[in-house]
Picture 1 (tube, rainbow over the protein chains, first blue to last red):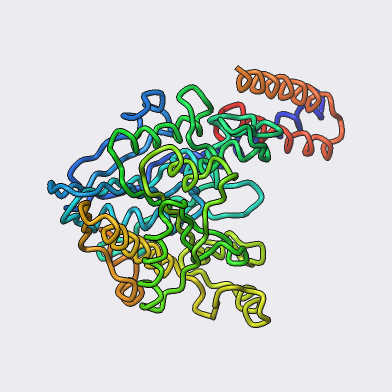
Picture 2: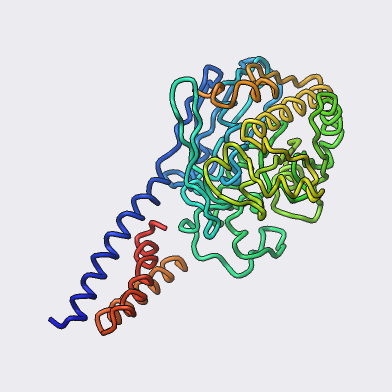
Length: 372
Length: 48
């Protein structure tokens, strides 16, 4: 055997070791997050119940039903549409583990884009997980990617033609659940998830629905409620309530010609009142420095503080940052205010959710206090 | 179908690069080829 063959064999051994070590780390992302249903959960179902093709795939996900047993409205809460936006996911987890519905019914899907929780976005340097200290233990949750895992529908097209509008978007948006509504049963994996959500809305007669998101601190649509035309009165009423509590939210109208978004397609194609809420998430921003678990949970980044100092930010940003607890608190308070405003506009359909932590309470006690 | 076509292409490229790895006499160039092989292995095995 010649010398270069021996070095080639050594290289193969190194490749095997690197692939094994890296593969083990990557495969850890397939281990599901622990979500412990609280006393308010009356039924746990799967999204595949609404579109059978998802059964047994990494795109199937748990659906938690919190039913008061009393007549009233049905609300749907989606977290994890974009798995790299942890406040939406954690808000849904807090509701699942802590909330109790006194009138009406709440359906929660904490990880609606579940395949997106099995990977992170390339070139972003995101951590694979983050930890939160609860009363009893330290719990770890996956930090995922913006879209579905590319392995579920690789390769991406050069141009994504949104169904059924034909709207053209960049190719990687084909895996963005919030560009894929209303979806179709025989489409891409992401379109099938979108279709299942639409089926759930129809079959469960959902009256009001929330899609919980986050965005980079420098973009205009943060700390905002995005509403379909039919929900704007209730949204405006909720905004007054929130302003009176010194919580600033911007009201954004859903663009009529921007297709595939939850607040557009749910509203156009069903009877539901759809709302999308955004908080400010420094780890998604382009100005960010060290990109680690602390930035996910504490949301402190010096560069955003400097940007705020020179007036380049629309929101206030101080050295306390934008911690995850505050972002979850904003989502929860916004959700409660919108439910209240909805009940004012349709008094015959009541929905009352108890045991939801107040904004100040979650800031004072921390997020972990409201998790098992 | 397109997915599996791309996997087949990845396997084909993997075999080509592997042959180059054993044909290459300069160990520095062998390292470059090894670095190409790692993501191909992870993609073919559906890990990443």
